[in-house]
Length: 391
Image (tube, rainbow, N blue to C red; front, side, top):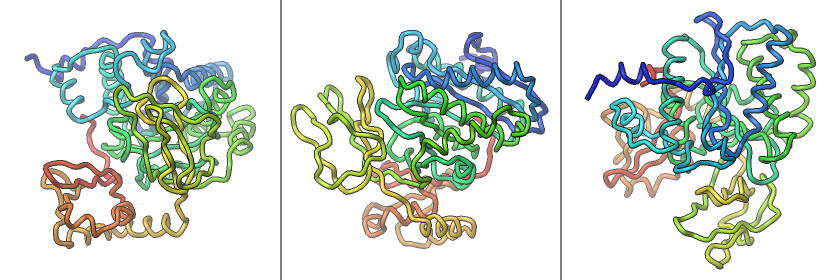
């Protein structure tokens, strides 16, 4: 096997992978926009091109670095979500190790993944940061714009600059999303859902979000953006009350399952326990609890039928902020059956017999959001972490 570092470094990147870039000083912030990681979600691509064009036409003064990366180019050309596998579900440790070892089993999506990985690595190796990664999406059902984040304090802080609902902890229910992988290295990473796939307003929403991200990252001064207040008000006028939510339930679609969502649901709509939500192979699927419907599936491809959300109280958010800043989480290790993972400081290994007496909300409070069952033990992974070298 050849030296993987040299081979990956020399990996060719297609010219249309980078929709545009602006390279400032290494000492300035870097914003990376990821658009079209799902091929049927083109609003983010269109919005990014509009922002790049406006920067050029208005000669906007730029104080940072700005990159726009096109996600699934092949699927986008075909107008499909993905061809072989979901490009936003393959960013797992073993897959990245395979890339670095040049042993990856290539299909349509892993070819795209290699190029995206190489680009992100080059950007982080070249620039100093801070780094802000924004992944632009749309949904198959009508929705107000919203943000999804891994529950780290730096993600929360940056998200609070946008007047849209914020959903925490999605990484607990999705296997291998790109933003979760980026968060492993301590960088700010937000997913923004701009609206329904084919609604032109989704393009406007994504455009407004990019401008606000550039301003709040201090890459661009708002005084230099013509009609900035129009962009600022675009999201404020469209969205429901700004709140934090967390996912309480996910309905995962099994292979060869005939799943059909009941028509008419709107994202964040209130639902009641035992309410009819969908059908699986002709059998009714009912809500497991009161809450809000989230991302109901109204397209042919996808592994997530729907989620159920609950609102997070301001008291809980304040308490978790206080607990994490004081690093009270270390007291969890004093509980019998709870141990720090020997290989890293961000994982607690918990005996399931002990865990059943500890509510999952306790781990959430201290920032341990992702839960993995491995070697007959529960592994709780902390989202707050120091910045480390990108691997």
